[in-house]
Image 1 (tube, rainbow, N blue to C red):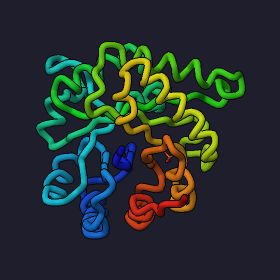
Image 2: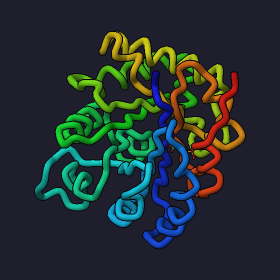
Image 3: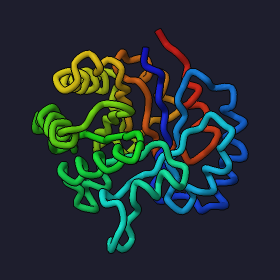
Image 4: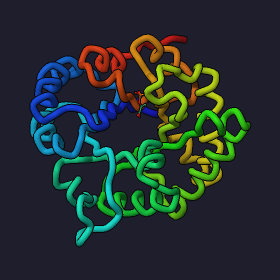
Length: 249
Ligand code: PEP
């Protein structure tokens, strides 16, 4: 059975002090959670301090981005080795904001995943369509392309796929459970082509305006194995409620 995987993506939010304040409440609040992987992706500047603060907890540290080279003259970039050194176990790759604002292509996503995996990092790979693509009936073809190109030559160990419809990110418009399930089932089908039965072990998580109010119904979908949470992960109380989602039949 797949263990639910719930990750906070803080994007460009929170100073080190604010991260510590959040964790002072959040670490004890989720201490009793053993049936969910709880993942936190703060900004780079908070990683080392967060790693120290969560070291005896059940919280897993993730970065939000990585560069594909090991080291060298790449001003402003962070290598996979540096993330491991800072205490990260996972990294988010291919977030739509990186694709949209920073020109990240499927080829770059693929290189980043390869470099991160080479250094032992787990991957949260984001895929998802824009509103225009959805309205133009291109959802499945976009996702097929992102998966095929992004995962070319990648083994599935510690791989998590995040389905994040771009029209639902930060907009307050969540995909309905039916919309999410339809795409998650499609992603699993594609993963089965790539990885055979191992596809059944992979977590496919949903991201896009997940809140305490909609998480229970989303998590009730057969192929929704977790959530990637932006806005609603910034407050301890709301992210705790998401991590402690209620099972609905
Ligand atoms: C995200 O950016 O990964 C995300 C899902 O954001 P939000 O929850 O704010 O829509």
